[in-house]
Length: 249
Image (cartoon, rainbow, N blue to C red; front, side):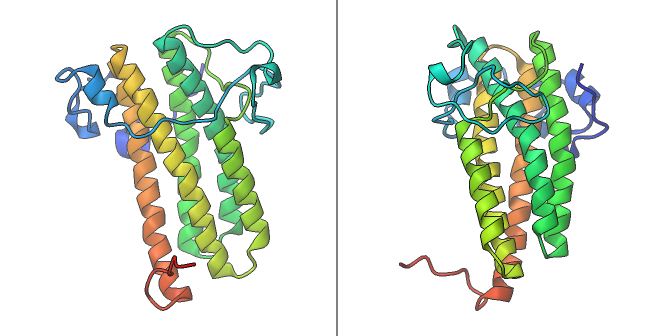
């Protein structure tokens, strides 16, 4: 059983979140029980693409970072038969991504030069550990064994590879900090879309408590993304002219 974290940032602790009503407006679930499921799902943002999961080289704490590209590369993988199976696959992919992101955030915190950025990465690392525990709790609530898919989703693997390359390439401390933020925010946006999709699936299935927990994480991801944006704007005033860099080619 996944160990419960002591706090979850904006949403309270896991034990509290698991028993509060899913229509609690404090977490933004204002349309639970009041609108059709398709209205909920229509406002969750784009779903992920190019991802798959399988059972090879399973490690509940860290994947091999080897994305699968077809069914033959993931022996034992089965296509989901219904919406709940799709939800389970999304949750397992998210668990795998969060488990890997803990290592990425640790490296980013070490590579960052600005103290405020180091602190932001370290804070989100702690939050990510709590989010992983929350995903384990949700899987248990559905009747599944907590854990990841065994293979890192393709989109996440690509983002991690890209962030590794940028960390090695950038030598100037301030510019490297900006690129670290850029790479971290790409991961945050991918997670926000993924959590929104999982939340919509849970709500459509009538699993409002699970949707409530997923919404709590989604809010935390949004707040982490906004914090990184504020830091980036400060850094750009240091390395540039005080205005955002031009995008003209």
